[in-house]
Length: 187
Image 1 (cartoon, rainbow, N blue to C red):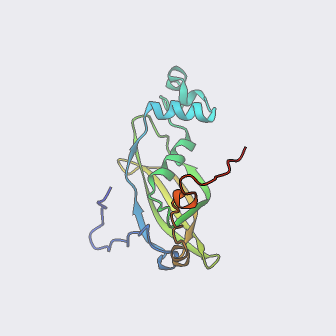
Image 2: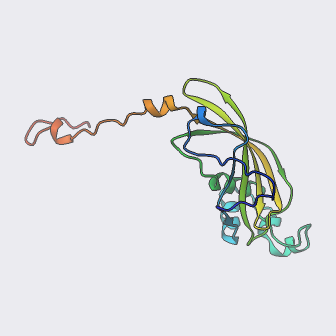
Image 3: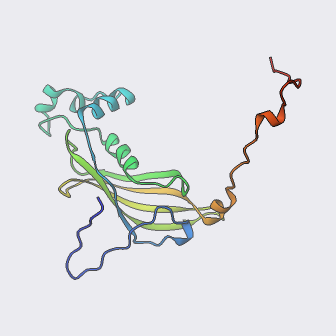
């Protein structure tokens, strides 16, 4: 989703640069992820992967008489897909540190498209190499209804780490052991 609605008379929030070093980030920057449609296959595979075969997710007959009137996606599937939808730059985001304060507001039904809207809510330097970046995430459907919200912390690299990460030189194996030279083979 590249277009954001801005109310008349308000200025748009600055947009997060996922490649920026920790020291260049500021609180309040926002982002909107691309979307993803939750399919029956997603739910079936997630149930098989996790062992969570709760009938609200896997049994159409049971779910039809349940509180949502049909099968719904696992809440943890929704959170997992949100992590995949957010464009975390692997050169900057070193690790997912914490997902907390998760609140499931509405069920995610099969066939619904979700996306993540978020904002940077905190910056905590922890070393010369990295800091903790805190986000507020809101997982929404295609109509803007809030499905899930969570706070997310990631370990974000500074420019110091990017400068220090020099690529290792490529070694030509033939230069180490020229043709015809003795080369011991470990047993």
